Length: 279
Image 1 (cartoon, one colour):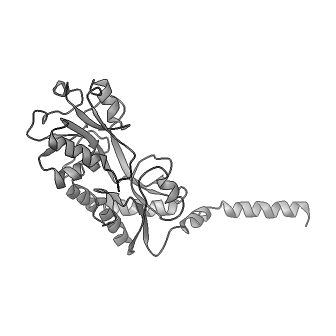
Image 2 (cartoon, one colour; image 1 turned 135 degrees about the vertical axis):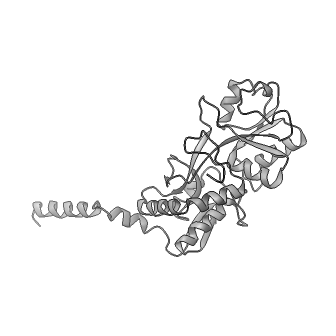
Image 3 (cartoon, rainbow, N blue to C red; image 1 turned 120 degrees about the vertical axis):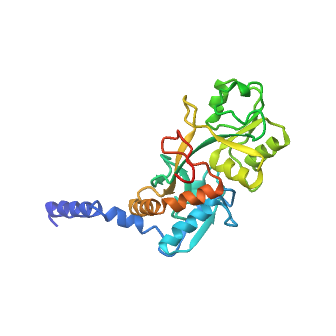
C-alpha cells in the first residue's frame, strides 16, 4: 500500500473514532439496559441501607420507575476506594447523592441543595442560635465530625477547645458517629451538635423528636457550608448524564417530596434560604 494511502486510512479511522456521537455510543454501551444498577452503602441510613429504607433508595426507585427498570444494587461501604471499586469498576451505572464538582465522577445536574446544620434541644437555651458566632455558644461543648467544613468556623469562634470530635471515615456497619453524636446530645453529654443536614435532619425527625435542626445558612465567611447534590455517573458517559438530567427536571417536585418527607433540609440554589414544602 502506498504511504499516502496508509496515511489516509489512518486519518479516516481517527475521524470515525472522534466523530460526533461515536464516543457517546461507546460509553453509553457500558450502561445496563436491564436494570438501574446502583452502587450504595449498605449501612448509611437515613441515606441508604440494604433494607431499602433510605431516601436515596426511594430516589433510586423513582428513577428506575421512570425508566421502567428494576433497581439492582451493588453494596460497598462509603469509604476510601468506593468509586474505584464500584462505578469505575463498572459494577454499577449510578451513585446517588454526590456533591457537585467531585472529580471522581461525572455529575448530573443537582437535584437538591442542603447545608450543615446545628442541632440543639428544641426547648433549651440554644434554640434561637442561628450562627456559630452566637455568644450563647461560648463555653459550650459542641459535637463535630472531624475534618468537616464547620470545624473551621468553630475554630474561628473559639469553640474547638471544648468540642467533642467524632470520626469522619468509618464503616457504618460497625460504627456510627452521627448516631453517637445525637445520642450524646440527647443524654446531655454535649450541648449541641453539627451534622450534614441530609444526615442529621432525617435522624432527628425519626428518632430524636425533642431536637431542633438549624441549617447554617447565615454564615458569611469561608469555607461554605452548603452543597449542591447530584447523581454521579462514569466520566465520559454524556448520553446517560443527559438522560438523567431530563428525568431530574421532569420529576423535581416528586424528588423534593421524598426529601422533605425524609426530613432533609432543602435550600435555594445559593444556599441562603431554607425552603418550605410549599416552595
